[in-house]
Amino acid sequence: MAITSMDPGPGATALQAWGGEMAAFGSNETVVDKVLPDMLHLIDPHWYQFPPMNPMWHGLLGFVMGVLSFISVTGNGMVVYIFTTTKSLKTPSNILVVNLAFSDFLMMALMAPPMIINCYNETWVFGPFACQLYACAGSLFGCVSIWTMTMIAFDRYNVIVKGIAAKPMTINGALLRVLGIWAFSLAWTLAPLFGWGRYVPEGNMTACGTDYFDKSVANITYIVTYSIACYFAPLFLIIYSYFFIIQAVAAHEKAMREQAKKMNVASLRSSDQANTSAECKLAKVALMTISLWFMAWTPYLVINFCGIFDGAPISPLATIWGSVFAKANAVYNPIVYGISHPKYRAALYARFPALACQPSADDNVSAASAATACTEEKPSA
Image (cartoon, rainbow, N blue to C red):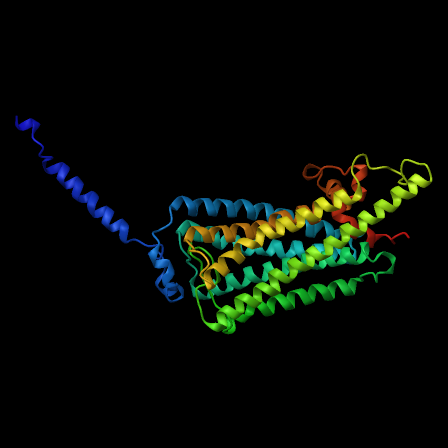
């Protein structure tokens, strides 16, 4: 009957004790445990309440960043190369497209490798100064990309809405805009290095960004004003520009249809676009541009505002999405502003046939490049 006893035996007892010790040890671990000593002074007490992230998330983040980096560096590098070496693409408007691609190229080329290494180590391993530089670079390239897209929208607004009454942008004008964008962005992103705002490791401990838990007046005012200058203002201006662009194109299309009816012809176009009007194409591109822009930068804004205004709890895992969505912006920008350009696609096909599809005839009225095409050729009355 001793065999049927409820006594678990010494082996089972030892196993249970070991399991209890492991559970107790695990319960005391935090996401900060792997942070190097020289980084601890930058860690907000908020993060000490969270257990370590599952290594799967670090591996997944590193893999995604590697894929995004490869696509972005290749795509944006190709845009810069084609636009700067093709004579027909060297126009004032395309200088803005090149600047956008160059900024996105630098963002992923310089920022993805450190994040991948940190994901492997599951913490930031490059020290406090590199953390400051990393956060500053991310903020700089992001702000440059945002305002470059705004300037592209302005250029399209100037050409399409104002038409022949618009003052065309010159090479010097485009270069001055680019210089102004970089100077404006650099001023905002250097401010935390001089005391207005602060850069610290993010909750996943593999990247650095703004400190949205510091409730000091200087830090809150920085995040709010920076958000206005580099999120709300550009977003409003982009929506404003595309709204009137679509309105102008729609009015033009309506006038052409009415004129065609008076002349008793099907269309005034030499090559009628079957089933797809110009305003529909432009509306789709405008909607895609604004939507992708909104998707890219809104998660970061929400995280920052939730932090400084205690809007919602922020976990280390949640901070991953801000990094991923913002850096994904560098992947689809060359698609929206480069690959959709018919002359770019033609040049890409001529030099790298395996990487591009030859543009079809109706690509010449691509809505995504409408303004650029208008600046390359004198607009007709």
